[in-house]
Image (tube, rainbow, N blue to C red; front, side):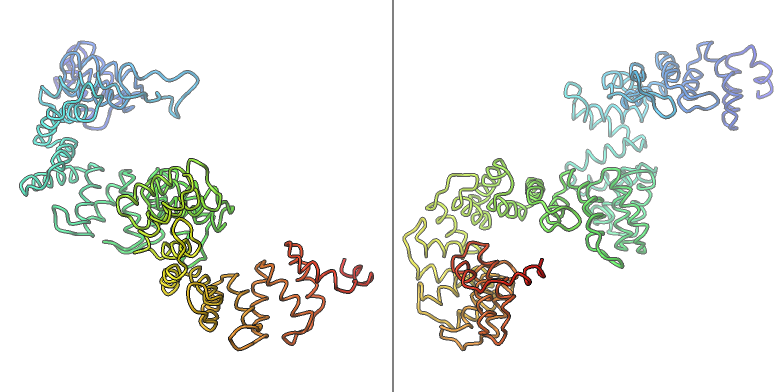
Length: 588
């Protein structure tokens, strides 16, 4: 037969087709193409289909999508099922008969067309014809369109049935689609077993999405025995096929040594690949790698670049991390308004801590009016559902007029509710009682609430309670306790407490005098810009109160205090002897 096909091929279309098929199987597509043309011109649909494939794949002929689609249409019109199925797939991917014209002024790298939007109508026409003739691939396409296409074409029950038929025929796309159908209600053990069988089948045939999903099941032990090594292999295979989420999972597995030997360099490479392809979780992880550092110091500028990629896709963790960098100026310009914007992204994505951080920035005048309104609305809704932290934040919004008209009475009510479980609310509610804001003034009860917050370690509460103990507000005076609290808060960096500690140790209170320590605390507060500490440090240095006499430094600190508007400091500076001209010239 081979001999006669060779002899008859110049005059027999069927013989030409058979000879072309043999040449194609041997890899000689260039020699096969003229024989296919001879058979196609005789109207043989298989030859038309094969010519279409040659043009699409550039096999034995220069690639031409237009010519390829035209020959596929000829074969499909004659009822050739494989052509119908392939044509449906092309239409679904924006590469059908009316979708191949390149836009004016634009060209792709190889001169091919720019893909258009899917043509669901045409895809459905050809897919249904092929599906009804038994094509499992076309059945999967029909299931896809009926399940996820335009609303006018949707029919979920029919979609499920077509996916089932395709899956039973062993088509990997059908198996994946039917597994996803079964996943909607997989509590029944038999249903779950069927789901696993089809998903495993699609994965074994190399379908990237199926490999990824089956890897997730293996990783978590859902429907199959937990096997992180097998999961890692599935992720690796899917990643190699270009599945972005699998690249992220495979990179993460390599970074952490989950189911595979750890390889930080390769792991980061896969994470970068996934991040550049648009996976926000991968970008966030890469950002975290640079933020935390390792053998090398942290690189916050590089971390910010990756966090921004993820934040732009509404990744709440990355948005929050980038906001924190902008708050501190690490690797990026310090910008509290940008931090507020990023906290808003994180908050809207479901991060409650970012709501609180955004609220704090709003209280300091950052963010915009819409931020204030949305944040207050979120706090109010969460507070009404029983969230005590939100109740505290909503109370602060009411107390400060953030996103809502100030209402001290309602603020006090919400702060009282939150005070049962939130330390900051105990402090705020205590202050309102002491000040009589929104409630009847009750310094004793206010001091009790502030004491609760101070004893847990809240610095602001410690400072206020110390001041109340110093002055006997809401209870007895206790200078010794006040000094302990001021000193503790000063050690934690509270500038006002540094000044207060210096003032108590400087004399005039019921605690031992230690003017050397007092001067040390005054200096600490003065260097941080506290005007009264600058005044007192200047006086100590000028009058040699603590054993150090330094008129030059004394003048400098007094002038700094005066520049901040302290009248006493201005009077002290005015009383200082004039500076000799030569000293001024030397200073200049």
